[in-house]
Image (cartoon, rainbow over the protein chains, first blue to last red):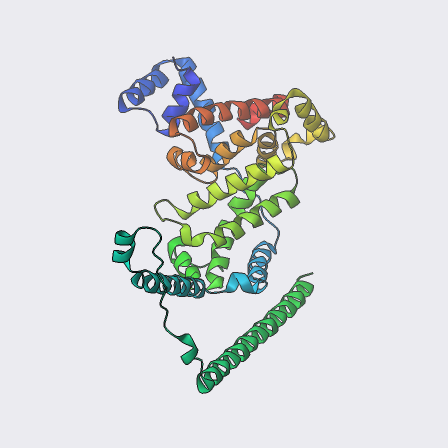
Length: 178
Length: 193
């Protein structure tokens, strides 16, 4: 059974059924105890609604945004690497392993194995890769490697320089704030 | 001057890389988030740390905001979880906040005020004082309902509770708040209500 106060709070909040609402409204009108309690709760409700919010420090937004900016600037290189690159490397390995497996499986003489039993040895026939690594191919390969290495080193230095510049801007900003 | 754009529009701009849009969101919600954090923290410094942490967490997971509920409801649920975690970390025994000893301690802190001076104190001062003596859950429900203008369903979402449980808890929280007010103000509460 609901107490008078609980019923009245539900009435004030508008969270009771229409039938209950009518019944409580009638009680407030006719019953002195209900009316007195209702008036008391309405006033209390008004007091609660007029509660003031606390004011954060002046630099609150600035501090939040600076923390976010600093977090972005100091993001480690390994965390900043594009996920597509990692997926690409993964795909390369999956592709390579699949090719090797296909070549290996296709070079097995299955009929000989099934006919001759387990003692039959099958020789793995791989393409002669030594032919591919001739002088010009190797030179080209090394040249691309060197170019890629230089490009990555340049990107790393640029990122480091921009992070340093950001940090110095933040430090001067904080000093100004203080 | 705060932006007139809606929360969702500001979120979209933030996700497109505009950090100033997020600064507008922070400005818009900082007072309430800070107030909510104050319900758990003992000092303004702790509350500021919690509130700041909440906005940073919200920024990090902004892309995961489903937009099925209001941004404020989503943000307040972050505040509630973060504040509860902070409270546990600080090993504050939440039960002790409501016990008799703590009340006496808080009462003694304010007993230096002249009784005749009571009238000069603002009503919100006494209300905030009484709220500070409530359990964090009670204070949060009261704050979300009255200051946050959240419905029982939204409060349930924020606090991970059923709306009916929230309704019961709100009723009890209001009763406790009234009791605290009466005890704090002794006879003066009659003037207040």
